[in-house]
Amino acid sequence: MYLVIDTWVWEKAQQAEPESMELLAKIQRKCEHKIIYDYEGEILDEYRKHIKQPPIVKLFSIMTQTQKIKPRPKGPIKIEGFDKSDLKFIQVAVSCSALVVSGESDFLELRERFLKNNNQKIQILTPAEALDRL
Image (cartoon, rainbow, N blue to C red; front, side, top):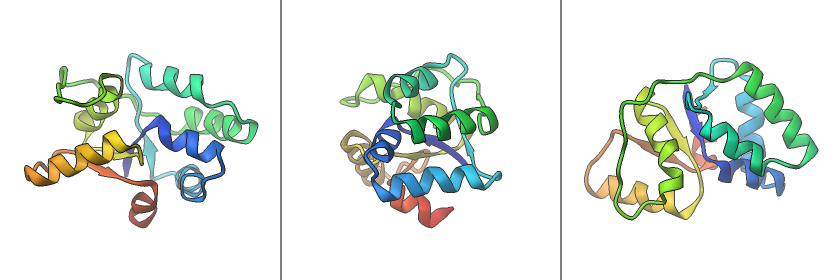
């Protein structure tokens, strides 16, 4: 399974939020699950700015060496009212049919908009929902 992990999940793991910690550990243990990044490195750069706690830094280091797949983007995506700095996560997910994992309100509101419009191109899951799928 391909996953695009929002920085929110890494931040919550640093705060010892159980579902985020368990999700990242499960992805790291199971080789068939892959975290997807962008060719330009914007997602990795954002992760590096936010991941500071030693145990999470170690997990991040291991995962970036063994998990990454870099899809080619399919062109810019515009979503009205959505944080432009988070569009990279959506763009990467669309380019390779990956699931987006986040608990951030912007992503959850976007999920509701997609459901209302019957848009199944992008699936956005909370860490708890992603754990159930893995």
